[in-house]
Image 1 (tube, rainbow, N blue to C red):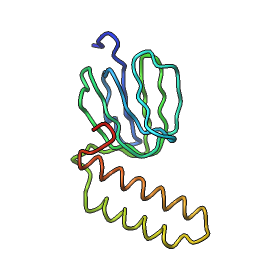
Image 2: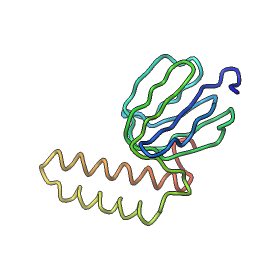
Image 3: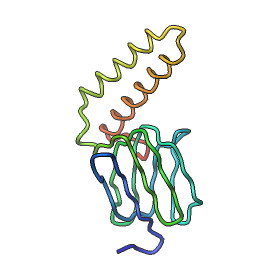
Image 4: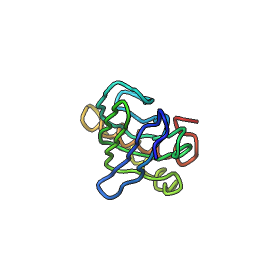
Length: 142
């Protein structure tokens, strides 16, 4: 049952519903930076970057996830996050994330004057850094 001023929050990937419950506040990685939604927030549709989704208050208080790429719809009483991928912090493999970061740096070094390859390398680096940050417990909400 929803508490007063709590928002219904859903985090969904193509494979799984990661969460479906109520929280007082949701922090999420929008394409142009982190944003926080509270009950009564103006309607907003944003492209999702890679980073930490953190929940405060309500039954989901303290829950954190890594989510990457997709969209988030914020309405006054609910937030729906549709992500290409999501993981709980304990599901993140530190060695895999570190290897991905190194791969991103290699791609960046090889990009030369090709702006598309440079942007792709930056996306790989950003996602790997965010995975490491969430796994280490030093995500955006800390």
